[in-house]
Length: 339
Ligand code: UD1
Image (cartoon, rainbow, N blue to C red; front, side, top):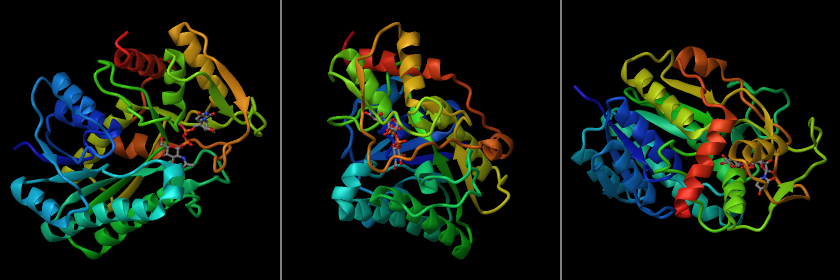
């Protein structure tokens, strides 16, 4: 019997890629999204890649009645939760909006998990580690106090899941801590669609290269790193999506070692902002207009994953090179621009 996976926020950047990988791995997937932070581009792209119209429920996960109805209408075996706001700066300006949306939506899902017995996968973030004392970070590295309401919601939702698993028999959970997801599907049919001016590095790079932005500001070149710019662990979006397939299989096949597990999803490879910019220029054969600017408030100097646990226990490993990923990001930006 085919298992059904619900993907909340399935029309977004990560959710759309996860939907494709799950469907290609043989799962039935139900997408639920309220399109509050994205349009239909990625949903349409998912349907084109998979060659069929995917089940789509337009709904808000903050609406408890709608969530209950969704679980009545579909027999869900596992749920992956992406439906949340994700802009760090905006969360500082609008904390209540972030707490209301990101926490309530997840509580409503956990209510269903409690009521019906459910496997829940939560999309967490390396932001929970703050500025780490030791690199690379393992899942045992301490979480640091969050520096934004966004980061706080990630920590709180991890705790909601951990505590629900401990309290309610039948609920199992995995939190995946993503490092920096970048890139796009090789088909260039789905990718990142930031609204307004992008906060994240790669969309800013591709928008600058296409001429939508005049110049990329590299925030800080006086960090204590080899070239003075910040280091991150950039993880390809398709590789990241595949980690979800492994995690879902682990839950559904009864392979979990504990009913609540946490995994880092990263490459284990630090890449500086400067290295990323240079790699983008080289692989795509172009020159990027950039300048050095002051440090951005709230940025950590360096963070990258120790992905050993995911490699060994999930049987997952990042495969694509930064160059391949940056070529895919550029192909997506060009397709958006009709070039
Ligand atoms: C941020 C969030 C993280 C979230 C992730 C989602 C924090 C502190 N960071 O990560 O939680 O999961 O986005 O993608 O909560 N940079 C520039 N110029 C730019 C944009 C970025 O130089 O125009 C630099 C930044 O200073 C940083 C690096 O690029 O060193 C990566 O930045 P970004 O893509 O915004 O990701 P993070 O801040 O690492």
